[in-house]
Image 1: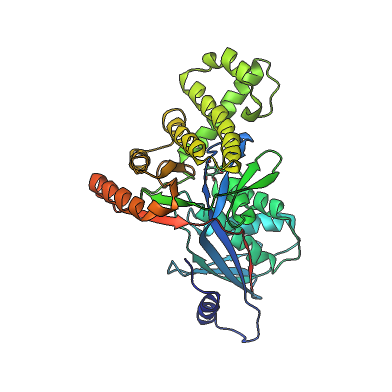
Image 2 (image 1 turned 180 degrees about the vertical axis):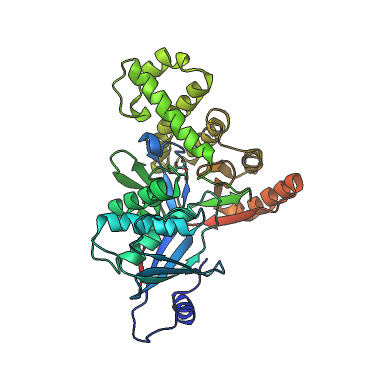
Length: 389
Ligand code: GLA
């Protein structure tokens, strides 16, 4: 799923010819799939994602121009910007993730010097698999080689989240950046998005994680995501105004929801119900994984999808169809949309022996119904970001 390290370095030499003795560092950062716990992270709740075998790599060498010069193997153009630009403006394209990270790094460090960057982004874009977080984390790691600060993985995840919140303008939570940096092979991450404490949940041997890309492009920066966040804040303020002592929706008790919830208004009531129940499902799913009770995990995944479709309203007809098709294949434990929604991918837990049949049936029927050829990826969960040797 990526260009080998040697050939990325070779491409770097071609694109940025220079001193043969200079150091070229390569940072890598994976995308993520979320098994359950959607739209809970920015409510300080729980999520259960894992890092996936698609990754973005950034090769970097210092330059003395005071500029960051960016090229990507997937794009034609070259971009340059000054590392000390006092008032940078977003361009509303992929370069914003890099500039956002640079700005946040500069806030935390004395200086970041000029650098040449070559990006090889292999996480499918706009598919809900966190290509942006992978780009941010890989960029931060690559640029840090040129800086002089040391961040812990959690600090780095938060820094990259700020880059996306402040410069890109998407008010995302912490899940994607955290997963990209903290992934572990063969394990999902149970993350408490308030304390940022996490533990690893092993996946049983006989099951595969299958990601089905509806090919409907989603964009988290688009208004609907931020609108959901604002709705959650409205719910929070409502319950606080009633006297509930809560810091986020994660703290809301069933009792308070039952007694005051109906006065929220129909839409906010459903948004809030999703968050409450989804948090509970994450904890139950992590326990069911520990017990190797895949039937229970699967049920929770279907419930999660229904809630995202009906209560949170972040699904779309193609995602619903993909889940329905998966559900009909014997040997599928569970399936749901993954990531921000409005397009992108589903994640299914599939018995290993039937994966080929699953791919054929689901892809065939999806294409028959939509005339869209879906991409299907069978992925392992992998280790989080780091530097390549
Ligand atoms: C996007 C955001 C995450 C999270 C999910 C929904 O991926 O970047 O922070 O909110 O949507 O669970």
